[in-house]
Length: 258
Length: 59
Image (cartoon, rainbow over all chains, first blue to last red; front, side, top):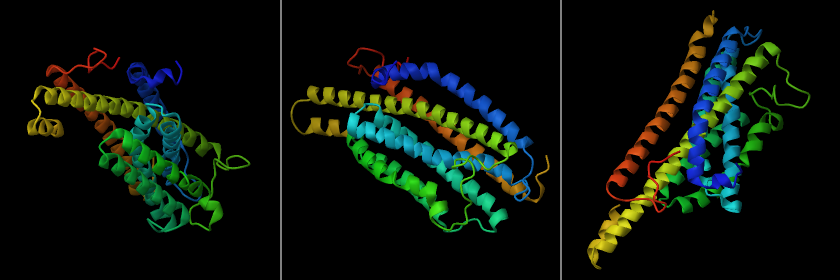
């Protein structure tokens, strides 16, 4: 099955019906393994047991950027290739990405209080992630404010691509500015600086959360396709009612009410 | 497993993640049921898709 085949929403729904149970099982197994490895991980010599917060903070932080990246690719799909499922994918991903970003901020804050002595600091990394969270909320608000999905999709796609400028700022903020947030310790030139005792649970949790995102995303895309099917059927119903009613004031009122 | 003096911070972090993920799963599940119910209602009112297929068909 190619990407073009998936342009047919009905075919996509059939694929989701087959794929979703498997994705859910893989996610559950990976999460269980990740949590088990996290529980077994030793205390860090500096952070103590709070290193366990990193096993959920880092995957959420990665996904906060990954999801925006996916939405950016989907936005290109909307604006350039006009793929029918591109804006469905972008719209469905936004609330999930916002949730991961919120969790990254919250768990980072809960780690920061015992380690830095503060829940929040206006440093470049924290502030740029907060901006990402606000952009997610803005995008969700935009989708909800514009009734026509096609018009909303174009505006949201432009906003998403403009917002993608924030991704390298988040990634390199710890290198470009003097921040309280520590520099990259996994995705860096020269390889990870983490000991295997921490790196393995972290990577398993990161893969588990990525599968969690994929599972939730395809399920949310299915809902969005069904929502659009409801909308088009309601419009067909409104049209058939208005054509049954004789020309005059009544037909307009019925069509507008649906 | 002894988490030492930071138990409340670690437990709060894991509970928050579990809660938000659970809410996401519930929201998506409820939304799916809502859309299917709306499609069923529309179908029962006599509206059908141009393809002639059932509106609630997802396979």
